Image 1 (cartoon, rainbow, N blue to C red):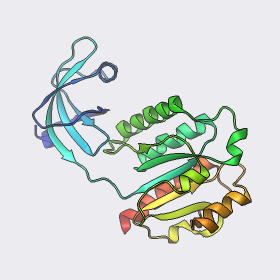
Image 2 (cartoon, one colour; image 1 turned 135 degrees about the horizontal axis):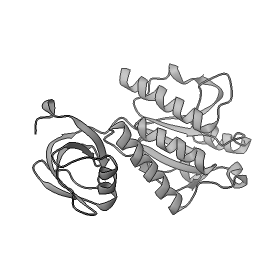
Image 3 (cartoon, helix red, strand yellow; image 1 turned 45 degrees about the vertical axis):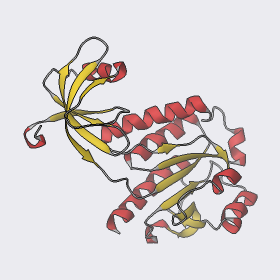
Image 4 (cartoon, rainbow, N blue to C red; image 1 turned 180 degrees about the vertical axis):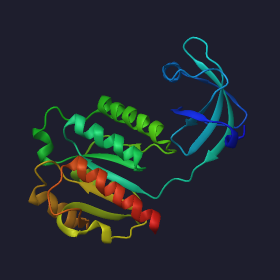
Amino acid sequence: MDRRHRTVVATFFVDEALVPGASLTLPGEVARHIRVRRLREGEVLRLTNGRGAIAEAKLERLPKDEAVVLIGDVENIPRPPQLGLLVPVADRERMLWLAEKSAELAVTSWQPVLFQRSASVSPRGEGEKFAQKVRARMIGAVEQSGGAWLPEIALELTLAEALVRPTETTAARFLLERGGRPLVDQRPSATLLLLGPEGGIEESERALIVDEHGWLPASLAETTLRFETAGVVAAGVLRALMTRA
C-alpha cells in the first residue's frame, strides 16, 4: 500500500501488534467509531497501538459489530525521550483534561500523587476506575494527534512512595514552583516533572522533595498557575527543548 497515493481519513487505536500484510479484525468499539466517521470499504485508515507502531490499513469489510482491515505499511516510531509527569490527585475533570493534553504532548508516564491537600478535594480522581477513564481520554488524544506512544499510567501513590519509585537515574527532576530557576533555561534529555496541588505544597512536603530527595525548583511564570495549566505549558516547553537538543 503506497501511502503517497492514498488519503488517510482517520486514526484509530488498537491494542494489537501491527504486522504488514496481516488481516486484522477490529473490535466492536473501533468498528462503531469507523461507522460514525462514515468510512467505506476500500478506504484507508491509520492504526496506532500506543507502543510505537503506526500502520496504514485498508478497510476490507465492515460487518455488524466489527471491522476487517488489511494492514499495509507499518512505521515503528522510537520512544520519545523520557518526560514523566507526577500530578496531584485533584479534581477529576481537571485531571482528565491534563491527561488528554499530556498524551498529545507525548508525555511518557503519568503518576498521580497524594499530597496533604488532596484529602480535601471532592470529587477527586483516584482508583482503578478513574485510571481507566484516564487511559480512555489518553487514547482519544493519541488518535486525534496521530501519536505513536501512549503514556504509561500508574495508580496514585503517596508523595513519599512516588519520590522513591524506580525510574531512569539520569532523568532531571524538577519541582514546578514560583521562584525556581526558569524552566526554559534547562537542557534536559530526560525529565521528571512534579506538579503541586491546588493551594500549594506544605513546607514538610517541600523539604522532603527538595532537601531530602534533591529535586530542583523550576518556574514557568511570575504568576501562580493552576496545576493543569502548569502541566500543559511545562510539558510543551520541555518537549520543545528536547527537540532542539
